[in-house]
Length: 391
Length: 180
Image 1 (cartoon, rainbow over the protein chains, first blue to last red):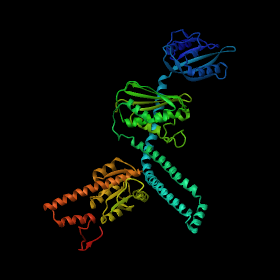
Image 2 (image 1 turned 45 degrees about the vertical axis):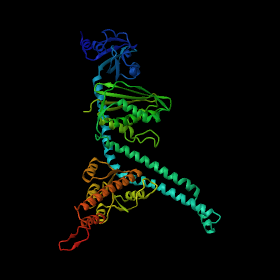
Image 3 (image 1 turned 120 degrees about the vertical axis):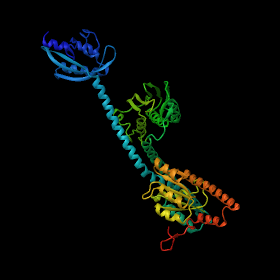
Image 4 (image 1 turned 135 degrees about the vertical axis):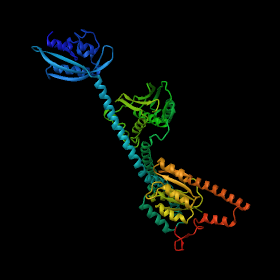
């Protein structure tokens, strides 16, 4: 056996030689082991058949580029399907060589990189979540400090607006009386004149209509500020001040559904597919808040005639609840930011941008997770995972 | 006529509270009263040394002296006053201290709900009236049984209307001190 033959036969890399027509002419033992197929069986097949559908186009495009001589070699990572149906990540090196005049062969070297890929995924998960946790911690601190400063002026402005509304009502009654008096037969000329002049200068009719509306609108504005500050305060309150208890998540889901039904029932129907869940140790009021935020978002993502599916089940020492909708879906660019405080795509006044970040923070304090998958035009799925026993 | 004392370092809070208390459009209605406002707890203490107060509503977080300390000292001079704490941040420590150390009547949070706040003041007056009525009856019984004298009862009454009047403070040189 020549050195080259020995290297081919004993290399730990899976190696295949492709003829000009793209079919495999030779493959070593490592390749067949890697793909879990019988020795000799790849011969005559195109290499692309072992590549998963999602990556095949990319794979074929690279082969084509090499064959055309656009580049001498390249390297890419694709997902491959083994003979037993399982899949693995493979780093593929591709090198073109001149087989005969005008005909280019290709050497493929395959290496299983599933383990690297997994740890890489894990690492990036940990990284984004560390970052997110840090964001949550700082928003909590900020909230505690800011809430006090805002609540003071908020307290008296809000209360004053209520009093102002009463005052204005009283003043309007008095002006009405005055107008009546000035318009009466018995009124003296000076009074009548004074009223006429004043009402010409000031558009009394308009003022009367507008002043109460003005106060009401201001009250609505303050109501919104109040809600935001309250939501913000929840961040610092989401700590373990409330006691955890054994709770029935299905009961929690059902009672939350009752609350949000008004927002949903005209647009979507609910399909429940509950599994069997044990009692879960948690602060149910907080978990319900998570359900509520996700359900309201699901409802808002649906324009009409949609379906919201709720499923649940056990996975080892965790339980999971899936809430999915067939609504608009989330743009990939936004998907990374949905848990960020104050991030919202809703129109002004509809959302505070704190619902999901608060949910995130609640799940984090429960040592659980909230995960999202979404495709634009198809819908969104949130998965909520909770440990059955708190630590 | 009842007297309410409002203490908050942010004077606009007290002003808004006064408006709210005086506004008859907001229920419940309160019996007749006057309102005194202070933006410094120390000044409020000086004032309370010789003015009878029925209800105190105090802020929690104030410079120099916090609300719990302030209410504790009010209670030393006027033990029968109903104490309410109004706070913008309900931290557990503050609430615990207010309840355990001072025995406040209500803990209210900012921003407050107008009718709830007024209701709390009305409730405070009611429970205080009950307490005082109880004590008056008990004193009457003691008087009948000869446990206390008319003189002692009168002193007690005086002390209730003008706190500190029955205790004379002497200075080192033998003079009588009028300021607390």
